[in-house]
Amino acid sequence: MRISAEQRAENQNRVRAAMDRLLRGEIPPGGNCDIKTLAREGGVDRTAFYGNRPYAQLRQEFETRLQAQRAAGEISDPRLAQITRLKNENDALKRRLAERDRTITLLTDFKAGALSRLAAQHDEITRLRAAPTGASNVRRFPARTSTAGPCH
Image (spheres, rainbow, N blue to C red):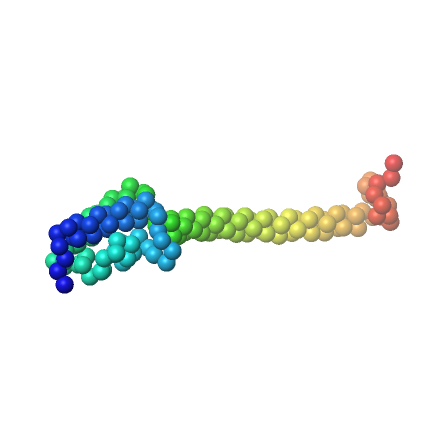
C-alpha cells in the first residue's frame, strides 16, 4: 500500500520526534535506544528503516546521532548507563578486594614472624634462667608465681 507524500512527511516528523525523545534518554518501558523502539514509538513498521525503504535515511541519521552521543560519553539509554556504572563499581571492588587480600597476606606473614620471634625469645629466657649455677656472679630472679602483674 502506497502512502501519500503528506503521510510520509507526517510519519517522518513522528519518527524524528521519537528519535529526539530516545536520544534524550526518554526510553519507554520495555524498550531500548534502538531501531525497533524507534519504529514502535514513531508508529512505523520497522522494515521501513532497512535497505531502500522510505525511512532508511532516518535509521542512518538515528545511528549517526547515537554513535556521536556515545563517542562524547553521553549514554542516552539509562540501562546502558547503569550497566556501565555497575561495571565500574565492580572493577573498583575487585581492586579493593585484591588490596585487602595483599594486606591480609602481609599481616599473616608478620604475625607468623612475630610469634616465631616471641617463641625464640621465650626459649632464650628459659635457657638463661636455667644456666647459672651456684658459683656464678649472676643472680637468679625468683620464678614468677603470680599472673596478676608486677608488684608495687
